[in-house]
Figure: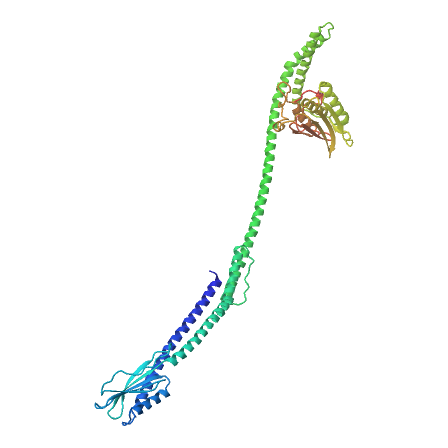
Length: 529
């Protein structure tokens, strides 16, 4: 139930209460007036009795009749007067009736016999019933009499009816006016402020803490509105503080998350570095073992291998050798050369290196490297092109080591492409460095193999087709020249190797073991991965 409905119910209750009180007042007033009329009628009857006592003893019935008619004419409330006269035993009794609106009547009876005879006028419909008053009368002489006065409340009731109608109309009008006035006043004084308060509470429940209630009067409702506004002010301040705290907390969380992300990135980089260090250490352990093995192989295999190679070369010089035997001797010579190359690769990968520092024309170096690879592998029909940026001049480096790097990369590219493939070798300046790229359209390298492609003895070729030292030697030679080597590859689309070295030459002291000393630089195209 809304406040407006409650206010109107209160107003109607007040009006009904006033109406009931008015009806009670009219009821009590009617009873009091009727009682006053009855008392007045009794007093009138006593006055008539006292006046009849003054009638002389010699008066007859006609005199008494005239007397009664005089009373009837003077008092309008009297409806009928009956006087019963009791005379001596020898004289008959009589009843003198004086009704209003009819002729008087005198009736005689036997002595001392009083019959209840009287004249009663028919009352009109709706008129009040007559009220009888009977009093004894002591007439002068020996007569006795009884006065029967009948009176009516008709005028009183008519007046009361009129008054009641006026009172009812007045009460109805008063109740309606009181209801409307009290309802409107209550609505304006109480209902409207409470409705504003309820609307403000609904807005606050919806999240609008900026809502305020206008205060016009400092009554109870006004003080309640002021308290509500103060409460909202404190809530607004608390909400602002909470929002500011949440913003600070969100900023701190974001900052902590950013710091944690950076630390995770740094940790991932450290893990990668640690893994690289582990791999490098493993490579160094392998290289150290390989050095010992290579020294033993060079000692144990070198001398007999040189003897066999010499005898084969002498045999090939014979002119009368059968063709079939000459072909077998050629195969033997090539296999002996292959074994020699493998031994040299092992030796080159384990020897310390101090590169030279001299001006080098890069176009000529790339041309020599490409021609050397094509001469060694004439059966490879893939197209090999090379280009050098015109802005790139001579650089200071060890041409032998750099040539060996390019030869190994181009040789690997030839192994990766088919006869319709293409290999592009390019060089361009990058700041203070020189970037050499070797791209091919081959089968590419799987992501798992890319991570391990520069490890010693790791090869993607079939068994017996590679030693897994070519790219490891390239990494060692690039490090000796003060640079770095990397690869980008997409399976099925080809690979690109990037060699970045300083244009002003390698450092004076090599930061990492290299493949050969200056006196034993690698000059062959062997050692492909």
